Image (cartoon, rainbow, N blue to C red; front, top):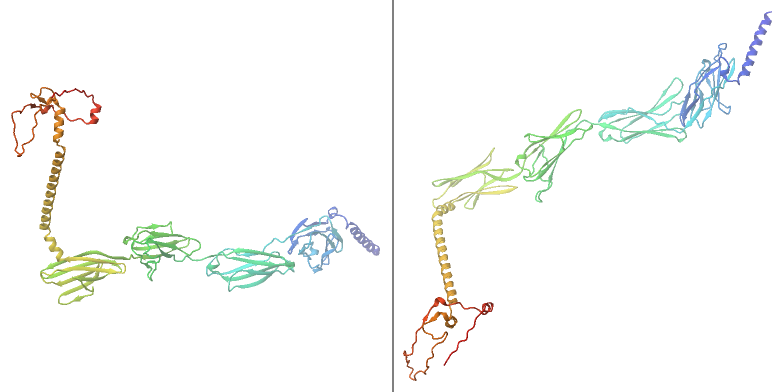
Length: 568
């Protein structure tokens, strides 16, 4: 009876096994207890790998053992991966990553060559193929790039370590990672991180010291995969550096050819510049800094405060421009400044000078300002004396310096009656100044000036009166000549008389008739016979004399003619 029961149970087991074989071609969703959870579609880049998560179930009446075997087939029903009891049967590029006896059917694919569709099958005390979901793997071109980290800005002098991680976490793919950077003294290392699922992460590190010269320079990481596939990532390095003291540069804007462009713009050890008076000057401020900062100017005398320009221009620079000019650079971290002192070069100029004569001694002082300091000398009647301290029996010179300038004093013994000419001569490389402080001859001349002026005035008055008299004389003489020239001649008088008959009366019987006289020849002895017997008298009225009318005027007037008969 016991034997029959055992044979009965064995026959039942075989029946179930047979039925499972029959159902292996049926979709699992139609059979209770058989289910698979896997993505319908996945995408992988050429040269990389993809992990397809998968888990499955069997009926509760069935228990999978450690000897359970999982198999993956492609669409051509070729086995691409299988696993039993932790042992892989890989096809070099395909791996069954999960534990089959735990219901894990996860598939791992490396460097897929083309698109394909896959299905899963389990074999243990049961055999079953899951056909309801067949994941499709889509292969695309390589687009992923390596990852560089950290990406940030560094400080000049800081030691920097960057890492470059290859795309994909594969099992057998071993990428080659290289760095593309123009940096000296770098250290490079390649490392691998192993994960529990058997995948690996490949990355490389590079260590160097950041310098400001590397700012905005490129840094790249190149990853080379199987089949000659290459991918790369590039970043731009940002290297900040502490704010340095600003730099001031000077240039001369040529106003005249005589002023060289480099004159006065060379700074000495004390940051002092020496422009020439009258020149055009430009100061430029610059600061080497990152991040950027604002620049501005301020002056010691308070006449200038500007935070809107980096250039200062001085036109026709004068002594009022002397002082300290400070350029200030400020950013979010700190503020620094640099100063320059401006000292104007100019030729000697007179401040004060005079001479005082006491009996036979002459004392003179001369105060001069210039930069650089002047060289002073004295001239007495054309003879030069150096500006150094000079003393003898006749002359004494003392020269010193004060805040007001260079001062020199001359004491001179003189002889009464001699001419004295004193000159103070100051000079430097930019010019010479000659001052005549005393001239005795000029002083005497100035005393005689009033009498000489009176004499000159009187002489000028005499000349003026004489000239006026001469002019009057010649004008009167000319008027008399014109008057004589305008007086009528004898013929014209007679003609006028005859033409104006109205002026005659009491002596003429007829108008215009003149009595005839016998004309006898003169005696032969030359004597004159005065015959007064035939003298006739008449009256002449000159008030009735009319002016003679010219031919032109007579033509314009109506003239009446009368015939005068003359009888013998």
